[in-house]
Length: 91
Image (tube, rainbow, N blue to C red; front, side, top):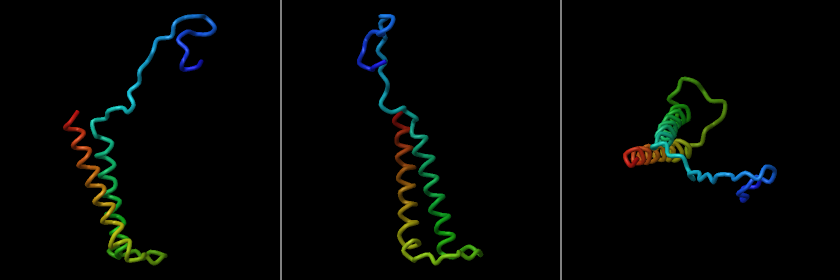
């Protein structure tokens, strides 16, 4: 059935209009979890790429990863965490 029809074409019964919210409100839980996950990911990247692990990686990791990538991922995780707390306080 087409969305713009107000009656069923077969039985001619009125179809009630349903208004859906554009985005479900989760109170910031999703952003908090995603922020914590990004922070954990940054820690794991830093641990293995910087050579703190006793394991040796089969590929050479450029210093760009430890100098810029993992701090950027960590800071973005902190930003998402703060944004999630803001959304939680707002709701």
